[in-house]
Length: 118
Image 1 (cartoon, helix red, strand yellow):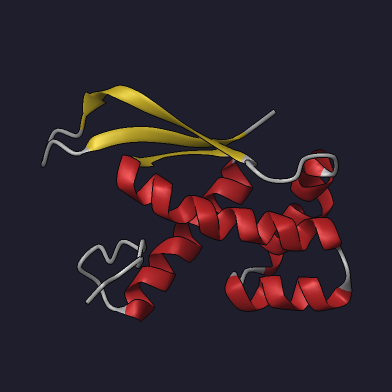
Image 2 (tube, helix red, strand yellow; image 1 turned 30 degrees about the vertical axis):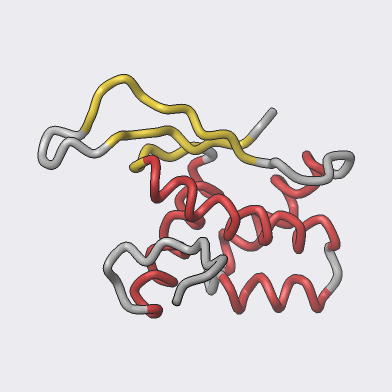
C-alpha cells in the first residue's frame, strides 16, 4: 500500500527519475526559467528547493552534498554564488509555477513555466 507516499513515479525507474530531476534542476539553475509539464514542474520543485537550502548554508559539506545530488560543477557553482544569496532572508518557496494556457500538441499535456521567485 502507498499510504502517504506523495512522489510521482512517471512510469520510470528510480535512476531514470533521478536523471530527469537532475536534468530539469540543471536547466533551471543555468537558464533561470524552464518550460515543462505541470506534473514534472511540481515534482522537480522539491528537489530544487532542497538544493537552494544547501546553497544557503554555503559550507563545504553542503557543497559536497549538492554535488552528490547534482553532479555538475558549473550548476552547483552558480547555485552557491548567484542563486542562493538571493534567498538569504527567505525560508522556503524559492520557485514559482506558472501554468500556460496552451497544451502540448503531441499528447495534450498541460505546460507550465518553472522559475525563481524574485
